[in-house]
Length: 262
Image 1 (cartoon, rainbow, N blue to C red):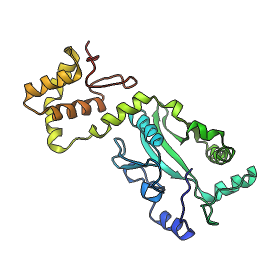
Image 2 (image 1 turned 180 degrees about the vertical axis):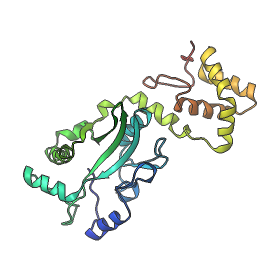
Image 3 (image 1 turned 90 degrees about the vertical axis):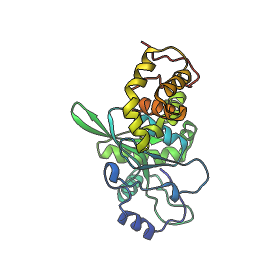
Image 4 (image 1 turned 30 degrees about the horizontal axis):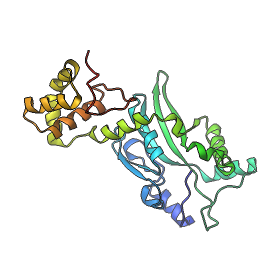
């Protein structure tokens, strides 16, 4: 639940008219973008594999959680910075005897947001989950817990599974590896053509040849007459597409021995 300054009721209504917090898949518009928040701290924008749109994250941890949703085969839609109905959150706060947040230096009631609302495919069809992202140290703050309780009850009233994700649930090597390969899921057209042409050869080479990944990719470049940069990009693309398997939860480097053999 993020709060930012310079909010008015007119601005909130303008956001609603713009379709903020509505839409599905590629057409979803987050309530907050990185342009809407103060510049302090880490903000991220990533092109989504599943949604084919720009996602906005207000912290590095949010981006790392997004990576986990991207990698999961079960998650089919990801909505970030999802706004909660203010009438509902105000009513919940009153019942809980909790002071509802207002925007700094104003009397404007805050539009609370949930960091992620995801759609997951299962045997019964589809299920929606709501997840809030917090650093574990913040969970020691009384005011944070009060606002989270408003959020928890909000989703409970709607029959939606809600939970909190902290840095303790994110494998640091997974986050690092996803950062390395994420932008290679989609390739420029000219490189995509080469990837389609050469991917089976690279997969066979990786699966059947010893050496470091970099040594194999240099050999591949020589065989195919392409640059080492192109070979690395195609390799990262095939890892992102799960056509070449590396252990995403261990430290990875091109200088490490190939562990894909066999």
